[in-house]
Length: 112
Length: 115
Image (cartoon, rainbow over all chains, first blue to last red; front, side, top):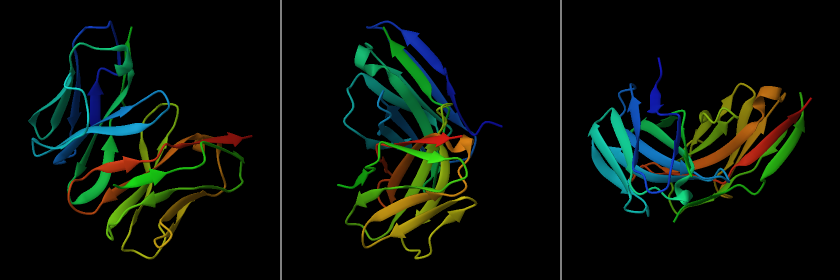
């Protein structure tokens, strides 16, 4: 029983392409997050949704657009991919009044 | 703005020995949570231990314990009886107890366990 799942786990694509990463959680949590982990392992929050409402929107290029069709899903769409977008992207979830955060396995995105 | 600092990019410990990883943070909040996450080579982020700021007692989970010094804004992780499987990146993280539920992570400490 996977708590937070992401697809795909690996994504290799060329500059200029558009790609999506999907995230699903079966924990019944009401808050979901997207993080970016760069090559130096620095983990930075990008977005957060609470009950399908965007509550955190860090300084991220407009090419990144999150979409939350329901509480259990948070997808990340990236337009016009650039070399600097290469990183590991983590999805996470938590219950707003329970501070434990659970992470997905990560998606390693490589832009060539 | 809140910040989390891990001043040790890398640490080594002999198997079965004890090691302490340092973390300091800066906040003007009085109520918050602190966490240690482990990221092994598999890259899965695993919650190791958490501490509520309002609790004076230090959290403990089996071989993992913390030294929480609220006044000093320090939150170190002690790993006792180190095992080869403890080798990983360790991240300290902070979250306010209310308001936007944003987690702030430190830059991580790579722990090597020597056989």
